[in-house]
Figure 1 (tube, rainbow, N blue to C red):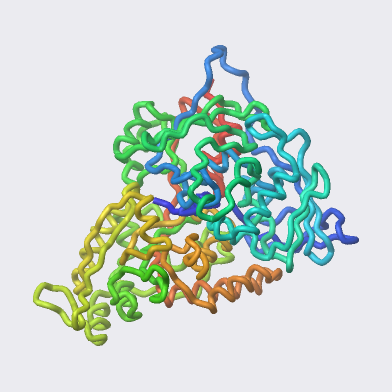
Figure 2 (cartoon, one colour; figure 1 turned 180 degrees about the vertical axis):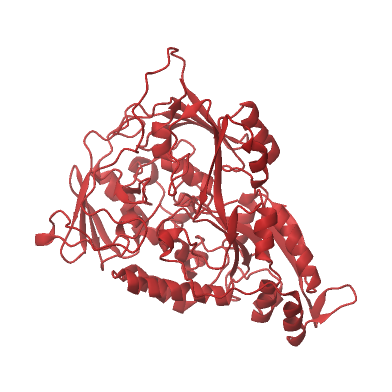
Length: 586
């Protein structure tokens, strides 16, 4: 259901896409260890000093089982990675896997703070333009070869030098001037200007094997690389990825530079049928679900051996309205009525968001309005001053009538040869979209709008939307696991559509692009907040998206088999910190 990571990325996601605001840390003498940072307005504060890589807050390991048989944890999920190539991955599932295979300099911890991942410490110059990170000793890729500071510097520099090729990662290096490796353990990043969320940015830039990726000289070659034998430095290493069968197997990395996992293997199995996936958990064919269908909550609550994990998320689901510029190459293929702001407003009035939450989500979420969820940054970044468009079918009809769209004998409004008849597509692996599509189709019909719901393979839907622009309306969502709003805001950038990046709506607004750059460079949190609130209002009024809900995160696992999962607001049970500490029940 989700575009992105994490995520983070993430998911976006598509990314699955974990992030928090990183204020500029003052340091003495052009490069001393950072002093205490200004107080943060967000729920998760920036570390006050350069942080060591942290271990997840877990119970002490229990005695190992008497049996010597490998311990395998099997997840079920409805999707699967679109690629294992971080340069061009869109779906959340890809970023969940990246989190296990790769490392970054920084990461978000279970408390929502940013700490070191690869970075054992860091310092920043007085002017905020030079950041220096220290890597651990004896860091190795999964194939046993050394992973050096030069590899880390190259991995970031590659994104800077080829933003079109690294389309889903390029926004994270905006404002970077240079990246070097002064010595075998240090990475130095020079900026064009201070960056408000530096530690967040670095949590999305993976350490990759240079020998694998440097062979691709063009953006097309890079993006066509599937990376099906992905090599990283993370706590798990790839054993098998069979995309056709929907099976991905990861083995624990016993040489991980921090404490290695306490289990031996993780398997992710794709299920085409949601009911079959839930039943597999119930009978013990799988041990956990990455995403639990809302319809299964009540049925599973009575199963004492199954633990349900529920929490407010940073995710959002939306109706995407084709907003690609008319002069885009290729020219967008859509019903031209969607270019009319009055049609978009009428569509917004035909959304009963509370009913969507109550019926399709079983009440497990809240109605949405902007592209920044209230759970992001403890509510600091969400604009509370936006008044949502109310559900009012009479108003929708009046708006369309006044705009010249007259009701036809078949119940469909038209203006000349332009009928209000739209494709309504959604990814076939979505748990909730079929019901949402049915409800919307009924409400739209009462306003004289005809929609034809259609389930589409996620890969095909991605190809149709980004940057082809061959669609009318799409129901989709973003994993939105980031603590910082930068990624969500970057989705709507003009160049993210033109270059085949995250922008699935095709929205293009030079003023919005300018504000995005400003918020990245604004160090004062309250000033940055004002800019971000303005950007949310702009998207709300232009309606490339109609955000209809913020779903709760729902996951589940068999508590009679495994224990010590991390159940935190900022991390899923499938995240690397969680899977490093999980262990079998004795």
